[in-house]
Image 1: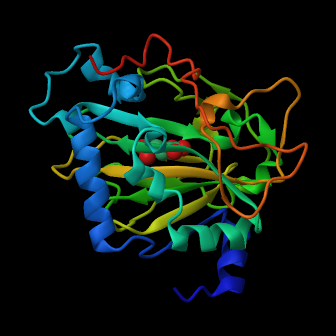
Image 2: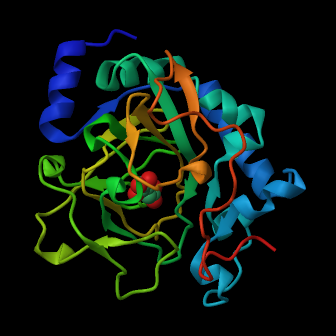
Length: 283
Ligand SMILES: O=C(O)CCC(=O)C(=O)O
């Protein structure tokens, strides 16, 4: 891949996100889709059961159980911790090259998720900044990588962002008034925020976005499936806030070296993320 390095980095710094085409080849997209579908249909080790989370409305019986089990899903948490195929995703060369350009040579990836936007079910991820969830920093050295396995747009719950919003501070977040999946805090007074821009992102392309960038995804009322692999990454020179723990995030050194006194890889990811009563797991 020819990276026009200067302009990519400038764009990222200016807008808080960039879209990089074709980080995955079509056979890789197919592989991840096949594997995702197999996991949802039960191909996972027993200890990984708690990592499969159904959509809140399905789990609470508020909507009819969909015919396709993939339409029941909200997310698969840290599949790299139990499945070699997803482990390999962390080492996708084109993703690592862009990460190195944006974050420097020493890179830790964490919190890989497959996120669904189930068809025909109201399922909004409210406007938020990922940095709100991460007890380490600086936030300028943390970003998200959002890689759809299906073509995405406004209709099927594609990513919507507020360009430049990463330049502001980390906003207060609150629980939205409407029913959402767990961990779905919303920036306080979200309605007073500028309009979001809906991105059209093809399967296998990647959005790299700053951890303070405000973003949201809306429901997928279309016929089109929407599955996304989303990964977070930070410089291995980030440091933890006092008394914070990050065991649950599943940190892996993917390039370069670690630094003493800074965030470290953890081999055994606990499921200490408190899933909460709302995040009902697959039975
Ligand atoms: O893909 C989605 O539905 C939500 C993604 C998101 O907001 C995130 O990963 O922070």
